[in-house]
Structures are given as structure tokens and as C-alpha cells.
Length: 52
Image 1: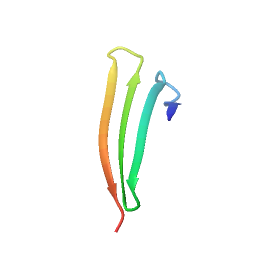
Image 2: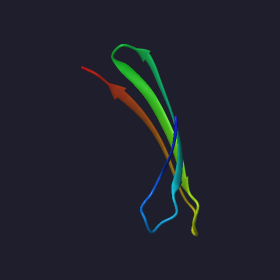
Image 3: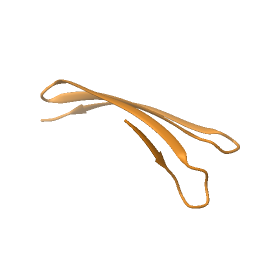
């Protein structure tokens, strides 16, 4: 998936994400985003979701 988002006074962020559900009760995800302004800000995340 991908998205553009931001506040009205800042340059927008560009984000890309991935999610995989190998089992019924859990999933894995990762995302990366960058903001095109000086200084350039980047964000990277990894996650595991468990359902119980």
C-alpha cells in the first residue's frame, strides 16, 4: 500500500507499507515514510500483531 499525507504548512509525507498474514491469529507488517523538506525526515517501522 502507499499513501501521501501531511499538515497544511509542511511538505507532504510519502509512505509505503507491507502486511502479511501467515496465520489466522497473527500478522507481520513494515512501513517506510519520508518527508521531502530540509532536514529530510524518515520513518521506518516493523510490527507483529497477535489476536487472542
